[in-house]
Length: 471
Image (cartoon, rainbow, N blue to C red):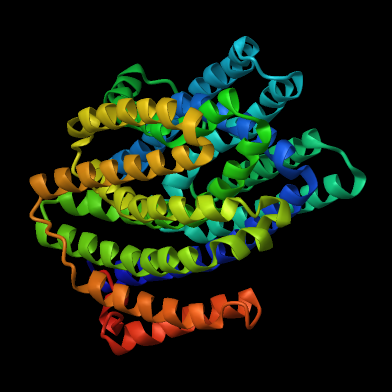
């Protein structure tokens, strides 16, 4: 990788980190206000609505989000033609599947407020669906400052809308209106700024659509199966248990979703580089990028896991309020799943770069079936605790299967040096946090723990100047 490209990647990564840090804080504030306003049952209804819609959003996506970066990153790709066809196909699929959601929910035994909420919130998913194609283009062209800015602005809109809803007591539908407005603003910003570089128009080239679908359907199938083992827990909870229990579990999942946005952001930025390196036959560069990416995600994941095990309950009380104290025990379990998501996310993106997504469909089918069986067995017995442990199993299975495929079809071999150094630094950090817990403010503990972790990791040689480069 030349120095110019390396600098662009570093700059875009830094912008993404800064933008993600700000949007993460805004997102947590939004959850804090919403959870305190809606309380357990109301937050459960909110979680049920958006979980139900997520199944239709994935069917609408059909793998198009990930295939965008893959196809436009190939050498000699006709970028404008591909992007216009991808965008047009996504518009059709989003309209079809998201219109189905309000009809299908009528056959579920939910109260009217949830059914009406599905109809209203489907607009949010529609804007997000269109947005994701544009994000893929920005990722490929390393212009992620626009994406970061749009995310921050949309989170400000969301937080403002939720605060107004709580102040004027607009109820659950006020929250949904704020969410739809946030998604609409994000799409408008992405579309507007994309026209500075490329003007997207409606285009239907059937041969191109067929090629897109032939490449995307394995991704679409795996993502849908992924959703079964990742989100069927909330759906089954909503059908078998009370909305208050869904709220306790859903609040924890909101925190996990915020944390797992980090590896998906990072992997999305790395995917075009991995695809280009593999397509050009630069195997050494492919493996170097992948190794450093794995190291970076391990450095992020391990302290989050260790820290959450120590401060889960006070953290959930701080985020969502005293009514959600029970979410702390759930977070201690789900944080393990988050660790596997960090690894599985990058591994699955590497599978896409290798163009081996068809080879992993069997693993997704196996995991989806076994996880679904686990949810049906353990949720009636253990409620959200059963759901959480089955989620840990499913994320471990997918991470292992994805990593196996990457190792099999490339010369990549995991190096556990950084893992051991990061683990040692995390345990040192954990000991310090344990000794401070209850003696000083939780936010101050988190800040000091982060500083201790980075210092120890640096002293152990886990962070070096050259590791910040991808060349």
